[in-house]
Length: 131
Image 1 (cartoon, rainbow, N blue to C red):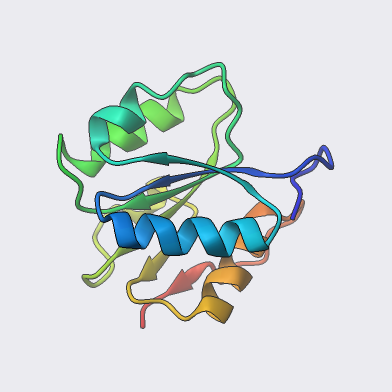
Image 2 (cartoon, rainbow, N blue to C red; image 1 turned 120 degrees about the horizontal axis):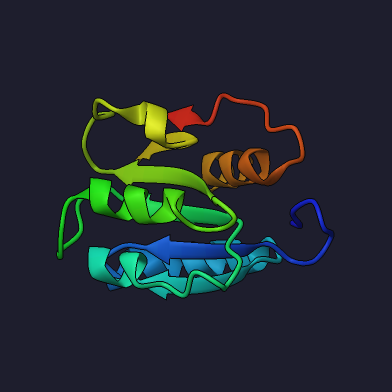
């Protein structure tokens, strides 16, 4: 799994649940991605802006602030990463700020398809999975 440049994709997994982070990290590593993690909104906001990130998998409800703070910080990065929003709840309003939405729990095959689509040169939505 590589973005446009051909090197392994870098994915930021932002979720306050350590089990979710572990499972997503293992799935992404199995796809060949380099994975970094954040546990709070603050860690997403403070993530090194000079470190390139191709995709952010962002939990809707994390401690430290509303999801909009994370989305604002990601939009301000020199290279705006694609964003896949994950939630145990139904799709929220305002999905125009993200590139995809998936409801937790998500099947591994669906997760893989969505991630590959978001990292492709010409992504093929549907990047939305409600259940």
